[in-house]
Image (cartoon, rainbow, N blue to C red; front, side):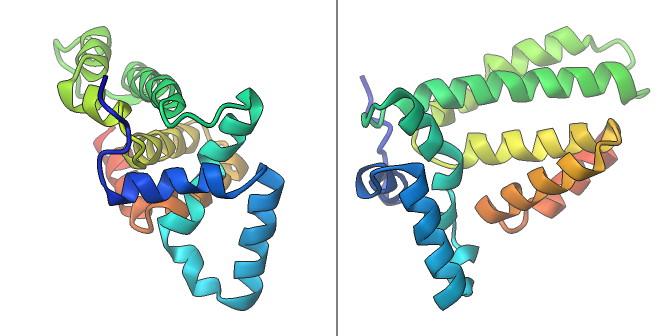
Amino acid sequence: FMSPLVGSDERNFYSRVVEFDSSFAYLQYLYNILLTDPARLQHSIETFAIVYLPFYDLFNISSPKLIITLNIALWITTALLFRELLIGYSDRLGDVSPNIVFAVLVLSPTAIYWSSTFAKDITSTFLCMAAAYLFFRKKAFFFIIVLVFATMIRPYSVAVIAIYISVV
């Protein structure tokens, strides 16, 4: 079975699992960065763990392969959110079934590959889609929270979210 640590970024992201004993220790680390060098918080190497480290704490597992479970759940949720947006808000579908769009997204070889790596791609896509979904549902407070998390992982997430909103 392929290792989810396929490159240097993946190894750096995973190193946070080994480096910190708990999510609380990691939050203390982020707080210290905020006080001493806030510019470092613009780098996903520092901030991505805020999403996955609690998942590792919850199951008390340190294997890098646990990320695959999280990524698959996030990708299926992303596809479901997109399907719901298409059903509820898009008038441009024509003869395209939202269920077919869902199936194509879930079975996409690209998504399957990225779901099996310790990278931020699936998480970032999920957060952008969740933000778009919350925008359409008029959940401003949660939209802003998700937007902040998304931009912590990928600073240009605002542009991606704007594209998602304009396409639907």
